[in-house]
Length: 284
Length: 284
DNA sequence: CCAATCTATTGATAAAAGCGGTAGTAACTA
DNA sequence: TAGTTACTACCGCTTTTATCAATAGATTGG
Image (tube, rainbow over all chains, first blue to last red; front, side, top):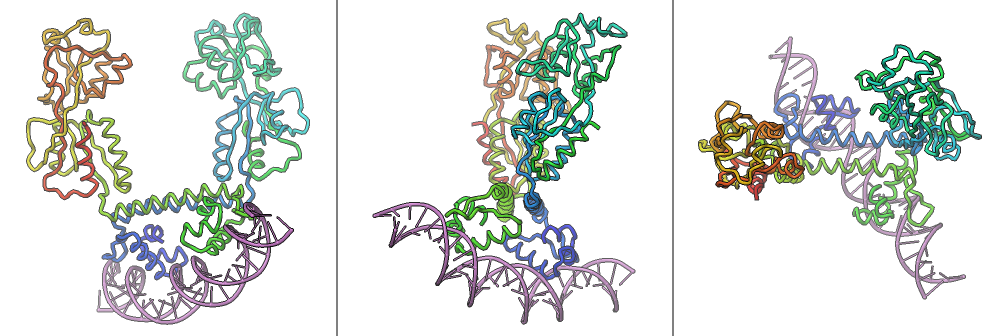
């Protein structure tokens, strides 16, 4: 009532918006003033005017109402069966800006559902999902197909080849396999040591790291060149910290397929369903 | 009731702490559960056990209650006549860590009172306070005494002379006035251009800046040496970014007196009174 | 000066909150 | 195993609160 009266500027109007009579608002405000010990409105004018103290209390009242609102929306969310939390496991390289946007939207749609974001390398993810340690997996497609896991192809993640701007390779106008051979390539591998089939070696000198972020740091230090997801290096390229290589041969290879997975036959709650469907659009 | 029941683990105990009967708590919780649409407590055991959903709602309920608590404490504060805001003007160099502590304590004692922190140079402050544009002033004592303003001496702020570690002055074991003469001194002056009496020139080459922070930056860039408040340079000295000069002569000069001022005969509310009294201890 | 639109107040009424008591049940104790 | 204790749910009754409709007085704008 206090907030409605302050916003409409009149007790009668507040009553109308609240579906109550004018007298209810009037007595309500008076009672609140008695409780607080000071006047909220100045009644000397036709329309009640917030006093300075009323102005101060209004912000507190709004804060209370906002918390109550949070509570009821959370209750609605719980009532409609939203999960307590959703466990999303993804390859480090797939935390795209568009995915973050989906997660923000998720937070608004499912205010009472927490997200656990697990990161790892692609080959590990199907196993984690199969063991029900994550609800959804997002990863680069590997050769193997895990049993009991449902896979959905959602697109290709564009990769680019990069090195530091003063690297010898940047001097060439066109680069073929021969040129690459003689310069150090930085390549991803799994923490267990296995090399990933999606990312073939093209140089005689290959160093490995277990995350794309680590690879990017090494490239930026001038250690070598690498194929990296475009979104991880686009700002560095724009600011001149990295340079893109002009490759001659087939590019399609370097937009590896990405897929989204979940446990087959699992009963999905509304939150997991929404997230699973949304993630399908993360590359489009 | 929900929170009390969750914390005590029993509806009866909750009723006792709330000064209500057991039946009131029981029906209250049931009504809440009906409103929310799901059960908060599992009643199969002797003592009601929070369900998972109840656990989730409890955090929201606590948040609501906390906001209500904020509102009522603010109301109490307003009721007991606390000011809407307190305007504290101080010399940039006097924002000491101990002052920040007092301000934090102020925020707890007077939750509904805002603080406006105005910064300026010492000579301007008496005028601002005299014109009632600030409630309290904290500054280095100047020669002139402003009419209608009450001054309280509260202590001396220790100053030290500093320069960069590789400065020629650091090579000397003891420095007298003659040595200082030939090196550039960085000195404070007011924005209006007047030199401040408290900080005398000791070198033939003097550059000025209008804030101690600017002076410190210049010293750290190796522009010259300066007398600066100890608390502004103590961490830089400890980390080796600045070096302290070993002066031979009188040091007392370099702990300028600090005073706290307010308008004479002004009716002070509880917040201004408390802050004025607290600030007196800022240098002890 | 009038019409419209406020607010405060009053008496009546419906809704709610709460109390005391009771019955049924789970956990503990001897 | 039986008795005791402490707990919850439910019921009827009472008190308190919330709200309304109606009314009187006040302010504003044309």
